[in-house]
Image (cartoon, rainbow, N blue to C red; front, side, top):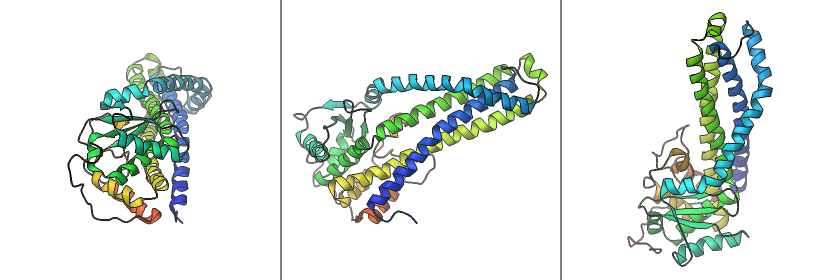
Length: 332
């Protein structure tokens, strides 16, 4: 039986996200094992002389290799922790603004933050006609919400408040941290996969590979395990991102008590959200600007699915779009 209301809808997606996040360390362990097996088959690491012996030896070597992988992960996390916002600003052209720069927008965000008893995140704007927004930051000092100029012009006050509430929900739920963790794990898994391919390519010509009669089978096992692990890592990261968007939509309704405004905002954003940025950054956007189709490798659920969820679980109405009477909007 599926979720029957807004609260159970949020809880179901939170549980799904937790289960997906657990999958990353499991995949990392499996890929390290596959890398070890492949390097034995390629002759880079010494072989025991038998396939069962090599598989057992690869399992034993996990005790040595896992701590190294944890160390690499920690360094990667440290870089992401301190450079995350700078990298995103450079990739998107976002700039911070103060209350005096955008008083209407700042007051909307501040009121939402006060309603949850939290410090108001930094506000940033991207000067583009695209309709989009995103939240960033790994701790209270770093939390920031970015919106585009196009979004400010196209949405009315209630719709803009709903979008800000959506992004504030990402902050409240620590989704920015979750997605950084997912991105780091996915990056490490990608790095290990590339190391596997390079190690086998250059190691297979070694003399030890020629003496290992099971080298071909070991390489096949490693490639199969590596390909499956790499593919699953991407699928898990994308599924985690999609799940968090459903939760943030529901969170926006919790904050504003206005599901119709969130639905209307999504309708206006659909097909007008594209911003040129790396995929890892676009995964954080309100919408990634891709076609509204269900794709296992998509970072966001289709707009139509998100609206259906708001209608079904939050009591929203999918009303006809009413465009604002002016092109400049109430925040220009």
